[in-house]
Length: 326
Length: 259
Image (cartoon, rainbow over all chains, first blue to last red; front, side, top):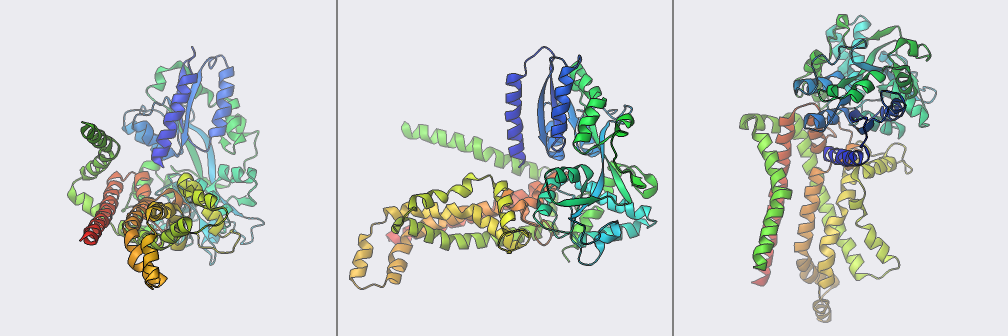
């Protein structure tokens, strides 16, 4: 898979460089796959502005972790748009992205989403809250958190929601053990999970709101439920050190928080992060919304969460996976 | 002169295209030390995935040995309308991107499938996916040998009163065996390493339906390159062992026949 991606990226780059010679300068955008359509629209709009006039873009899309590793291995990137902070921080560790990448008014976060439940038409199993997922006979589909970085949002949403309901750390982890006993399939990615759920497997799919909206647009006969307590998903964008040297890349980075760009994200099911734009959309805000940095729920940011929960062979989730074999 | 050039091209090509990447893989796996290599390769979850993978690959090899030979036989010896089309169909599993094969098999054998035959996310589903992608190996190895095989011997045996089973066992089968074995070796090796076709249809539940290639993918995605490299090297070593053993059997059979 990775090799294929790298090959595709290579072809895309060749094609891009062949057509992209202009005085406005070319920008290499490396992004994860879901917001592809949004970026397509944003780039078109940007090229019509004064700052973006004459600029050209080489775009590359793929799984967030794969994209980050490709950039770390030398793929040219001026701007990286990834699905979670640790992928950007990996590039900080490699010296490709400056340490202070998140130092803007929006902390480097360009769009939001939340973890939701996609259920079958008319919700035959009456799934509303996290407690319903571990009732007898309920099958939950969620990707394997070790193959899908994005699936970690789901796991931490489950943990945080339990904590918010007053459970102790121990009880919340016990809930995760119980939850994964209800998972008959752990697909490799969010899109695979959606494909498998669409094929009729499972009663509820744990995914992001924007994926649920995407599924509705694609005509998958489902509906989605927002639990009272859930995790706010924040997707980062960062300028790399090479991007900081290009006026077009810097202008585009700023443009991502313009109302035009934020509306394009909203059109793809993402929640705009600019308040004036968000007001125009009616995204439901659950009372118990928390973030990966909500310390009182035991969530202390991705770095700590990753070490504790997702370290291969040693983390909490690795132990839970292991327990499934017995 | 010509031989020297051919040898140069062969060595150079092999080195750049095959040996270099394999050496790099082995090199990266040893970067963390032999102890770490062993620890990673023998991790309980990795071992369980390896057992499942080898079991499925072995079944693949056996089924292909029988079914592949039968298909080659029908394609060479039988006449029927549409034979050319069937012959061309055999290679399609190679042409189809394996992830598409996985999606198609999921639609067919999954819970929403048209036959109500739900084996997706079980070992049976993975097995079917592997059989699909390994079909051409034995067929394409046996077919040319069968085409070249002179029917005089078989006719002579028949005229001497040998039953058709005896003819197959004593005359045809020994001639086909080297080809069957080489097809089986390729099918086994491919089944061990297959990723695209199985990633969707295997449930990826550790200790139950997780195969090695998907386990390796998970280790890469979660930043454990040492674990991924260790299991990859182990898989390669097993495949190499199987291919060498099959080569040895073939050489032994050939010598044995000449004597």
